[in-house]
Amino acid sequence: MQSIHRTVLLNEAIDGLNLKANSTVVDATFGGGGHSAEICRRSPSAKIIALDQDKSVSKNKASSCNIIFYNENFRNLDKVLEKDEKVNGIIFDLGLSSNQLENSGRGFSFQKDEPLLMTMKANPTSWDLTALDVVNTWSEKSLADIIYGYGEEKFSRKIAKGIVEARNQKKIETTFELVKIISKSVPGVYKRGRLHYATKTFQAIRIAVNVSDFFS
Ligand SMILES: C[S@@+](CC[C@H](N)C(=O)[O-])C[C@H]1O[C@@H](n2cnc3c(N)ncnc32)[C@H](O)[C@@H]1O
Image (cartoon, rainbow, N blue to C red; front, top):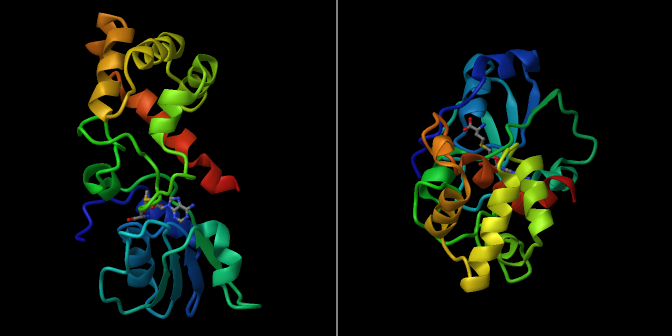
């Protein structure tokens, strides 16, 4: 898939790697490959060990560098690296790529009407946590805590209350249903602000769904 992701802090991040000739660098969150491409442009002799857990991500471009790509969660980095392999630098660009927000069909964005999944896993099983589980089964307090803690949303309690009231009527199944609930829960003046009123709640739920992948 053609990448539409615009890499953030590109120069700053690559400057920080302090690349030398024949460096081995790990790009732990390959995404659209923007950071790897810049490493390669500056240091064509580099060996890049690239990982991304999203099955729709692949080493999409021919490259003058030696890029070895693994569809792996970076928590398995030790399995991917050859024993005693010396690594000179590692880059983590945590979060979502624009491709995932726009094209995944997994409900990451409040601007698209999609099923409430929000998991980074391309083919989640019934064991994997999804946004559907979070909004339909977590307690009002847990919802308020994550919406405040991960989203810094000042109306977290009102939104959590709105979610619980709505799910008592009907299971919440899509992103647009959730947006409507948030809209009903926050004051009118908040909805006229620069930032869309659902931004922080969606951010919080995305983190809640995927946080265990970073730390387990
Ligand atoms: C912000 S994007 C990276 C963009 C990339 N640096 C670029 O310039 O195109 C973050 C990427 O990290 C991946 N990712 C998130 N958590 C991960 C994990 N635990 N292991 C491996 N990849 C992960 C996502 O699938 C996503 O493609």
